[in-house]
Picture 1 (tube, rainbow, N blue to C red):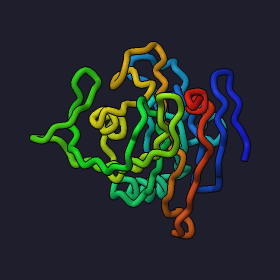
Picture 2 (spheres, helix red, strand yellow; picture 1 turned 90 degrees about the vertical axis):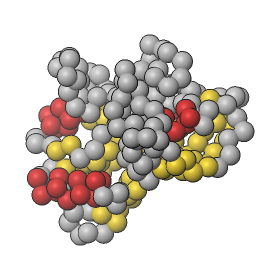
Picture 3 (spheres, one colour; picture 1 turned 180 degrees about the horizontal axis):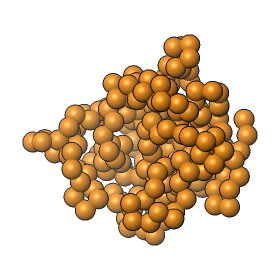
Picture 4 (cartoon, one colour; picture 1 turned 45 degrees about the vertical axis):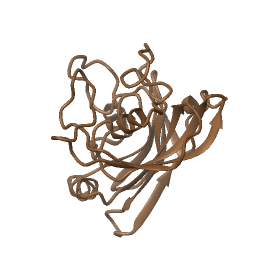
Length: 217
């Protein structure tokens, strides 16, 4: 629809009405305030400058880009929260991973509920159920563009599952080689949920990000 311009980031608005705002989050932008540095820009603050009160429904990691929905009132917030918490929302991601020869696979491996030095891992003893399906899209010079569909919502789920099957994200400072670039070659390109006004399923999606495109050569 249009783009919100800021000194730091341009925020494409995919859709807006009286209940929700759907945006395409840039890689490398916080959703909410950092606990240690309150001065860093956040997507929530940028949207509140334009729309007034905004309610966060779900999050994407700092380094992950893609489609996000925000509520504009408490009733909508509660309605959308219910869908996310009960697995009603359908999400699809693009990931650029290291390596080729990727075969379609559904990973069903439990992920730890607590992190160790910022990382999560597979934990068969006390981990929480985590399921992700992966389908390769195209190979690019030692890398593969993969579609990922998470059926559960564990923290770092896609990243941990890809690392476990030995196809880590090309750029992932935690689960691949350390780098100063904290952006991730991961984005949510599609969200499907029931709209709070008419209770009908809506699909919101965006094109692959320029950041991911830069690795597909």
